[in-house]
Length: 204
Image 1 (tube, rainbow, N blue to C red):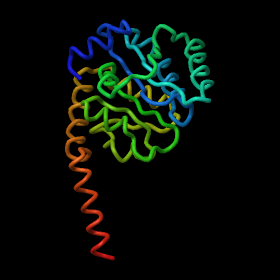
Image 2: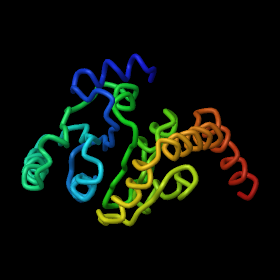
Image 3: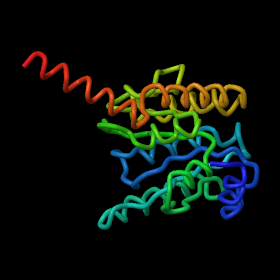
Protein backbone atom coordinates (compact mmCIF):
# COMPACT_ATOMS: atom_id res chain seq x y z
CA UNK A 1 0.00 0.00 0.00
CA UNK A 2 1.11 3.55 -0.70
CA UNK A 3 1.60 6.22 1.96
CA UNK A 4 -1.63 7.85 0.73
CA UNK A 5 -3.57 4.59 1.08
CA UNK A 6 -2.24 4.16 4.61
CA UNK A 7 -3.19 7.72 5.51
CA UNK A 8 -6.74 7.25 4.22
CA UNK A 9 -7.20 3.88 5.95
CA UNK A 10 -5.82 5.15 9.26
CA UNK A 11 -7.90 8.31 9.01
CA UNK A 12 -11.12 6.32 9.10
CA UNK A 13 -10.15 4.92 12.51
CA UNK A 14 -8.52 8.15 13.72
CA UNK A 15 -5.21 6.34 14.20
CA UNK A 16 -3.09 9.26 13.04
CA UNK A 17 0.61 8.45 13.09
CA UNK A 18 0.34 5.85 15.85
CA UNK A 19 2.33 2.66 15.42
CA UNK A 20 -0.17 -0.13 14.85
CA UNK A 21 -0.01 -3.83 15.64
CA UNK A 22 -2.72 -6.16 14.46
CA UNK A 23 -4.19 -9.53 13.66
CA UNK A 24 -6.31 -10.21 10.57
CA UNK A 25 -8.68 -13.10 9.94
CA UNK A 26 -11.75 -14.79 11.28
CA UNK A 27 -12.28 -14.14 15.00
CA UNK A 28 -12.12 -17.58 16.58
CA UNK A 29 -10.59 -17.91 20.01
CA UNK A 30 -7.78 -20.44 20.52
CA UNK A 31 -7.74 -21.50 16.86
CA UNK A 32 -6.84 -18.01 15.61
CA UNK A 33 -5.43 -16.87 18.94
CA UNK A 34 -6.87 -13.36 19.23
CA UNK A 35 -7.12 -13.78 23.00
CA UNK A 36 -3.33 -14.26 23.17
CA UNK A 37 -2.88 -11.08 21.14
CA UNK A 38 -5.08 -9.05 23.49
CA UNK A 39 -3.29 -10.43 26.56
CA UNK A 40 0.06 -9.42 25.04
CA UNK A 41 -1.31 -5.94 24.30
CA UNK A 42 -2.15 -5.56 27.99
CA UNK A 43 1.44 -6.41 28.92
CA UNK A 44 2.72 -3.67 26.61
CA UNK A 45 0.15 -1.08 27.62
CA UNK A 46 2.23 1.00 30.03
CA UNK A 47 5.48 0.81 28.08
CA UNK A 48 3.88 1.86 24.77
CA UNK A 49 0.88 4.09 25.56
CA UNK A 50 0.70 5.45 22.01
CA UNK A 51 0.61 2.09 20.19
CA UNK A 52 -2.75 0.94 18.87
CA UNK A 53 -3.80 -2.70 18.52
CA UNK A 54 -6.24 -3.85 15.84
CA UNK A 55 -8.34 -7.00 15.61
CA UNK A 56 -9.34 -7.04 11.94
CA UNK A 57 -12.04 -9.45 10.81
CA UNK A 58 -15.30 -10.96 12.01
CA UNK A 59 -16.45 -14.33 13.32
CA UNK A 60 -18.12 -16.97 11.20
CA UNK A 61 -21.91 -17.04 11.58
CA UNK A 62 -22.65 -18.96 14.75
CA UNK A 63 -19.39 -17.93 16.40
CA UNK A 64 -20.46 -14.42 17.39
CA UNK A 65 -19.82 -15.30 21.05
CA UNK A 66 -16.08 -15.43 20.28
CA UNK A 67 -16.06 -11.73 19.39
CA UNK A 68 -18.28 -10.87 22.36
CA UNK A 69 -15.92 -12.70 24.72
CA UNK A 70 -12.90 -10.97 23.20
CA UNK A 71 -14.49 -7.52 23.47
CA UNK A 72 -15.39 -8.21 27.11
CA UNK A 73 -11.76 -9.15 27.78
CA UNK A 74 -10.58 -5.89 26.22
CA UNK A 75 -12.86 -3.95 28.59
CA UNK A 76 -11.75 -6.04 31.57
CA UNK A 77 -8.09 -5.28 30.81
CA UNK A 78 -8.75 -1.56 30.46
CA UNK A 79 -7.82 -1.50 26.78
CA UNK A 80 -10.97 -0.03 25.28
CA UNK A 81 -9.11 3.02 23.99
CA UNK A 82 -6.17 0.96 22.72
CA UNK A 83 -7.71 -2.05 20.95
CA UNK A 84 -9.86 -1.44 17.85
CA UNK A 85 -12.26 -3.74 16.04
CA UNK A 86 -12.58 -2.36 12.51
CA UNK A 87 -14.46 -5.43 11.27
CA UNK A 88 -13.76 -6.98 7.90
CA UNK A 89 -11.53 -5.06 5.50
CA UNK A 90 -12.28 -5.60 1.84
CA UNK A 91 -8.81 -6.32 0.50
CA UNK A 92 -5.28 -7.22 1.50
CA UNK A 93 -3.91 -3.78 0.62
CA UNK A 94 -6.46 -2.25 2.96
CA UNK A 95 -5.40 -4.53 5.80
CA UNK A 96 -1.71 -3.85 5.32
CA UNK A 97 -2.35 -0.11 5.01
CA UNK A 98 -3.61 -0.20 8.61
CA UNK A 99 -0.75 -2.18 10.13
CA UNK A 100 2.91 -1.59 10.93
CA UNK A 101 3.37 -5.01 12.56
CA UNK A 102 1.34 -8.13 11.73
CA UNK A 103 0.72 -10.84 14.32
CA UNK A 104 -0.34 -14.39 13.44
CA UNK A 105 -1.15 -15.87 16.88
CA UNK A 106 -2.82 -19.11 15.74
CA UNK A 107 -3.24 -21.54 18.59
CA UNK A 108 -3.38 -24.59 16.32
CA UNK A 109 -1.25 -25.32 13.24
CA UNK A 110 -2.21 -23.49 10.04
CA UNK A 111 -1.51 -25.53 6.89
CA UNK A 112 -0.38 -22.39 5.08
CA UNK A 113 -0.79 -18.88 6.47
CA UNK A 114 -2.03 -16.56 3.74
CA UNK A 115 -1.90 -13.56 6.06
CA UNK A 116 1.74 -14.30 6.84
CA UNK A 117 2.74 -14.33 3.18
CA UNK A 118 0.58 -11.30 2.35
CA UNK A 119 2.24 -9.32 5.13
CA UNK A 120 5.68 -10.34 3.93
CA UNK A 121 4.78 -9.28 0.39
CA UNK A 122 3.85 -5.87 1.79
CA UNK A 123 7.18 -5.64 3.68
CA UNK A 124 5.48 -5.83 7.06
CA UNK A 125 7.32 -7.54 9.92
CA UNK A 126 5.45 -10.62 11.10
CA UNK A 127 5.34 -12.20 14.56
CA UNK A 128 3.76 -15.65 14.40
CA UNK A 129 3.39 -18.85 16.38
CA UNK A 130 5.98 -21.58 15.94
CA UNK A 131 3.50 -24.18 14.72
CA UNK A 132 2.31 -25.36 11.32
CA UNK A 133 2.93 -23.47 8.11
CA UNK A 134 3.82 -20.21 9.83
CA UNK A 135 6.95 -21.75 11.31
CA UNK A 136 7.99 -22.93 7.86
CA UNK A 137 7.30 -19.62 6.11
CA UNK A 138 9.15 -17.43 8.61
CA UNK A 139 12.88 -17.71 9.27
CA UNK A 140 12.89 -16.91 12.98
CA UNK A 141 15.06 -13.92 13.77
CA UNK A 142 15.63 -13.07 10.12
CA UNK A 143 12.46 -12.69 8.06
CA UNK A 144 10.15 -12.65 11.07
CA UNK A 145 9.82 -13.65 14.71
CA UNK A 146 8.21 -16.73 16.24
CA UNK A 147 6.75 -17.46 19.67
CA UNK A 148 5.11 -20.49 21.34
CA UNK A 149 1.37 -20.79 20.65
CA UNK A 150 -0.73 -19.39 23.49
CA UNK A 151 2.23 -17.70 25.21
CA UNK A 152 1.20 -14.06 25.58
CA UNK A 153 4.34 -13.17 27.55
CA UNK A 154 6.58 -14.49 24.76
CA UNK A 155 4.52 -12.61 22.16
CA UNK A 156 4.83 -9.38 24.14
CA UNK A 157 8.62 -9.80 24.25
CA UNK A 158 8.84 -10.23 20.49
CA UNK A 159 6.59 -7.23 19.93
CA UNK A 160 8.65 -5.19 22.39
CA UNK A 161 11.71 -5.86 20.25
CA UNK A 162 9.99 -4.40 17.19
CA UNK A 163 8.17 -1.56 18.94
CA UNK A 164 11.37 -0.34 20.57
CA UNK A 165 13.13 0.20 17.25
CA UNK A 166 11.74 1.61 13.98
CA UNK A 167 15.00 0.48 12.37
CA UNK A 168 14.41 -3.09 13.51
CA UNK A 169 10.86 -3.02 12.14
CA UNK A 170 12.09 -1.75 8.79
CA UNK A 171 14.86 -4.35 8.61
CA UNK A 172 12.51 -7.25 9.35
CA UNK A 173 10.00 -5.89 6.85
CA UNK A 174 12.67 -5.65 4.16
CA UNK A 175 13.92 -9.18 4.78
CA UNK A 176 10.35 -10.49 4.84
CA UNK A 177 9.75 -8.94 1.42
CA UNK A 178 12.97 -10.49 0.10
CA UNK A 179 11.92 -13.93 1.35
CA UNK A 180 8.51 -13.54 -0.26
CA UNK A 181 10.07 -12.68 -3.61
CA UNK A 182 12.51 -15.59 -3.46
CA UNK A 183 10.08 -18.26 -2.22
CA UNK A 184 6.41 -17.38 -2.44
CA UNK A 185 5.56 -15.55 -5.65
CA UNK A 186 3.11 -17.33 -7.96
CA UNK A 187 5.84 -18.07 -10.50
CA UNK A 188 8.15 -19.44 -7.84
CA UNK A 189 5.40 -21.65 -6.36
CA UNK A 190 4.39 -22.90 -9.80
CA UNK A 191 7.96 -23.79 -10.69
CA UNK A 192 8.43 -25.61 -7.38
CA UNK A 193 5.23 -27.57 -7.97
CA UNK A 194 6.41 -28.63 -11.43
CA UNK A 195 9.76 -29.70 -10.00
CA UNK A 196 7.97 -31.76 -7.37
CA UNK A 197 5.77 -33.48 -9.98
CA UNK A 198 8.83 -34.14 -12.12
CA UNK A 199 10.63 -35.77 -9.23
CA UNK A 200 7.64 -37.95 -8.38
CA UNK A 201 7.24 -39.07 -12.01
CA UNK A 202 10.95 -39.76 -12.36
CA UNK A 203 10.84 -42.12 -9.41
CA UNK A 204 7.45 -43.60 -10.28
